[in-house]
Length: 251
Image (cartoon, rainbow, N blue to C red; front, side, top):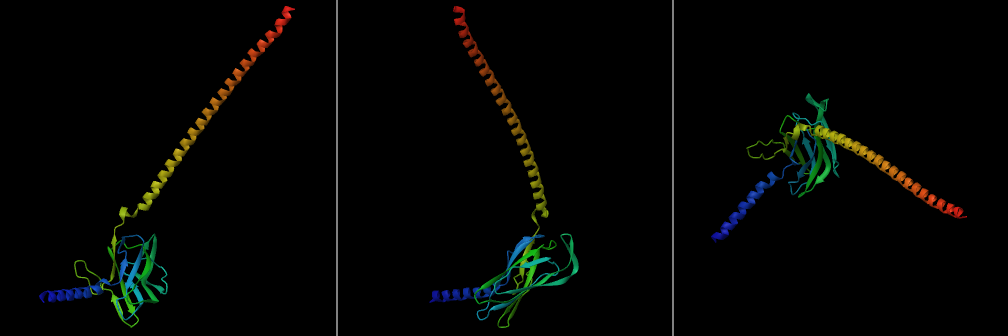
């Protein structure tokens, strides 16, 4: 009897833990959740449906106005319409030598459906990513067809418990090599090209020299052959001439 009660208690406890953990693990996220500062990356906004009796029919992603992203491109998702809303910046920012006074602020998907028990991914190409922060928050508003709205907008704090409705977080790390990898690579390519050109030139010179040497050897061989042939012809002519003279002297 005691064993049965313990087993039932353990099962109830486990079910309670799973029930509590379920909603916390099913919030809107971005994948991957890490990227390099100053770079470009492709993100998948992953949206699970948490309800058993309703479908998700709308999603809004609100970008951080204090750390703007100059370029946000969306990938078509079958069945969904997308709209990117821009807003003026409090202070202009410089991107690739150009001054940017407005940036994408809200990305809105409508017209589709995420049924119960499923999830949907919404791809984004974003950049250049800010260099003045180590994380970006993507605050999401999820709308269901029963008029329920869930706001995933609470900013997680390191060292504290995760909020009930956390915003998606993209961690940003300094770019490797200080962001000059492209310049170094270009320099390396130039040096390799110069070295290849020099090697080709040397090879061409050696080929020409070899060709001249082969030509000289061939000429010498031809002349030697001609000389031998002339010598043989001379000897033969002398023998024949001697034979002709011999009968005349006997007569």
